[in-house]
Length: 242
Image (tube, rainbow, N blue to C red; front, side):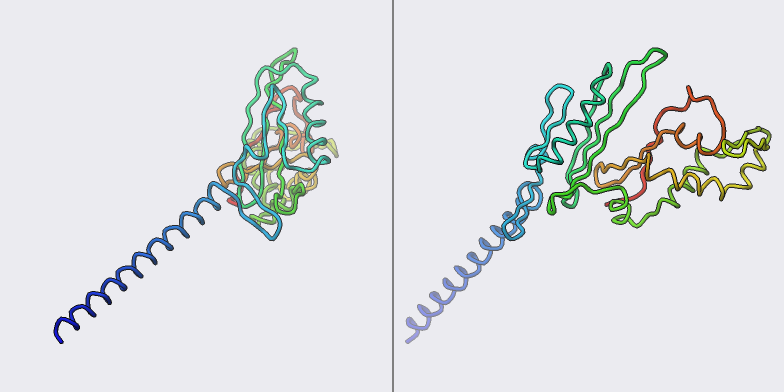
């Protein structure tokens, strides 16, 4: 009788250990499949999938960035934009690219040769991979809950304000003002900047952080007269996280 009980106990223990090991194997397998598909592999949505490998969508040949597995319209328009820039004498080119929350974001920075000095030209593109469409600036800003007005205010405070003893001439009214008068009328100029931003601003994502780009001279010329040969560089600033 005792032998039988001992044998039953051993069998039960074996079955319990077997079930525990099986559960462990299933759990580990499930975790690695999940990790692979979300970090290295593909997310599936019905009959669609999104790869998180940038190389599945982007290739670089010479001074051109080509799109793969993207609609012909988007790809051809992107190449046409690059061709316009490539008509210039390109000294250097850097590409920032990544996929963040199903958005493929590309920024191409060109250094171009000019008679007076070299200058930078930037091209950006943001693609919603699930819906296979280009995202405009408004859609990106909505995702991070920031407005053009907030960006315009930041630009004025950081880059457009002038010293109190400096004099400027309003580019629309031709009225000469002291720096103090100009700064005290900030709201008027913030509105001008906000109205200009949708036309000139570029947006891109890098390491999950969202940045905007605008040329400083494009902003100053809606506020006051300035030397157009200076301040042609980009304001490149982080505005949120995707």
